[in-house]
Image (cartoon, rainbow, N blue to C red; front, side):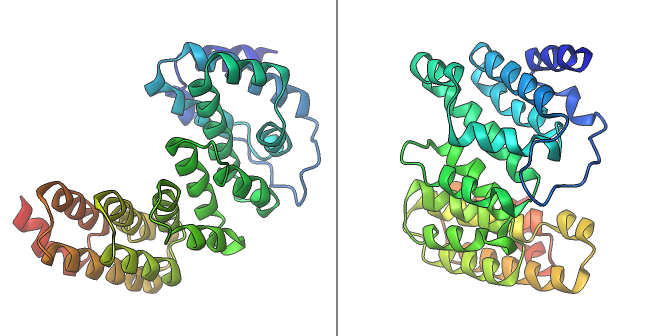
Length: 271
């Protein structure tokens, strides 16, 4: 109960300090069986749900961080909430649809952070929900990107060529795959972008795929160098096509994230 009280206090602040709390270290289970923490996890999730409509819209995304701190033991509860509404959730959908959608986005973001393929069908279903807004699609796409090598790539690549808001969310999710297949697909989508929104989504995806700090953390220098080169070449080529001022800024920011030798003249010239 003390822990629940702490969570409630953090909810009111959209949990900025909670991000730095020590996470649970339990291993992810092979299945979604309830754990000894099940009842407490349920109480915390209900507390987050109750707080969601009271929070300013720009602070609702922070609730995903609260849910992430529950750790792997929360996976059954997170999956259940995304597949079956409780009475409280049904009431929220009727009274404040935007808050309900933000709660779903927080659930799927927390679920994706566990990187457990058992959750893949639930995440795919959430991503493809006909009523999903852009925030929910993006959160689900990012979750699929974190499961790219465990089946997420198939769904993301299928939607990435559709020239739709869901397709643009898929492009961002592909960036989290950080493999050659996904990065080359992003490069192709950037080259053939149908509009500014698709171009920006592909550029964002390439910035995630080629992120220099992410590859430093991953500790795979040879693979990282190859991926960063593919991303930098695609972004530089897009800049050579003389984009609009707004798109140029997006492309330059993406190149700064990649920080590959090919990108440096473009970044220097933009300063």
